[in-house]
Length: 595
Image 1 (cartoon, one colour):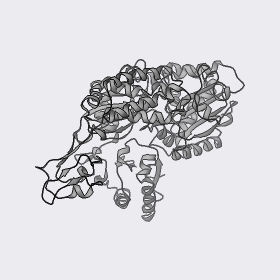
Image 2: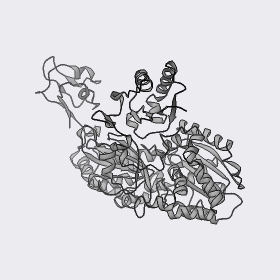
Image 3: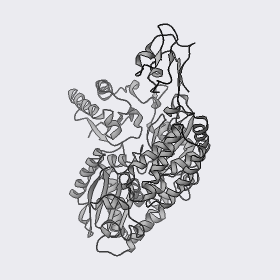
Image 4: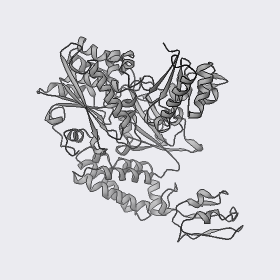
């Protein structure tokens, strides 16, 4: 038995911040002071507070050390692990109050969260199946196989009100019932782990921190619909997730939880991994299945839907990672428990990847119906540098921008659609007053243009034309007539594209036109970018009253556009200026401004 457990985040965020070196130093120092038999170092998944990485928590005290550096490890080992004295200066500041150390669950970031899909992330070693089993892992699968008929399993999922967390929000139990009703010699269960939205990392974190929850849920789905084979389609850019999935699948097979005759019930189910090459369109269900089949990832016409004719032409169920992560808890705790959370039409919780202009970047899981204000101002800690909230982009390239006037709208599937956005997979990017909404729309359009598979004309050509219009506007070459043409084109693309990529690609444009039309007008009529972002519409000026003539600006200007003598005010030749901003960045006297 260990007297202390040191949990170090081994998710992608903290790994990129150097958590592997922290683990190495920990083990080295623990061995040096003879604590190897008393202190257990555990590499976990994501704790959620990615902005504070590398993160380390010491139990039983629950001391939350943030932004840990290799040179801090010796002090933590000598003082905390050896002498029992918590190193308060290295603790997350919100856990220290009047010299007292409070629980992490009492901090603003965690106290409003309710973790279901993320319940084991940051708690267990994802590479150890025994730790998952100790947290009731595979009990739900055992319960289904020994106590429920397939029809009863589907009914529990229906009664829970669980809707797909991949974006569309289709009722999960209903989808399973469609596949179960179709007779075939072979059926499949697929998992969409091809998380492609810019700024989204929810599914990655679940796979890195709790891969067995997805494996267990897919086996339950296999039993419910009569499938014996499953595939997890995960993007190859997620090496840690892929590695942990491979380990988890091997362990599950070794324990008899995958393969033949699971729990001695006669039920057979096995899983395989398929790596995606990063095509955003392969997040669409039919394109994903086409890719698994070894063909180019392009969508198919629907109907027939996958529940009738899916992978290899057989009835197939496809859900995303977060949807599956909820399944075992629903089975164990009951449909009523899950449906007691959330809103009338959107049950349970939702995981969001909180990013952009926000203090607490990271993963949050909150009940459906939580307002955007609560997420941004309370959990997220607000906007840095005293800036004002301007908008939040939900749903990535498929979603829309929510303005400040809708900060108090409860977030669920229907409310987001009503205000011109969508849930998407859960990316939530916060923007402040320094963001140009025309530029934001252009950024997402550029992404969808690049990611279009090109199969259908509205998406292949329409998104390109839409991007060209936005580019023209950001260069100060647009007209008011262009705004009307853009809106018309948006609806044409939405109504005529083959798959969800094209059907939702115009959303960022439509939502910014709806809520920030004045910014478009400023670009077109005044030839100005109110946020000072669009390069072609900027001009840099030197205030002669503030300029000290230090010459630093002229020395860093790459094109020699700044002239002046020492100790005399300088000036910028606007014909030469390439608007790189190097001069403004280097000026120590705030004499240079952009307008």
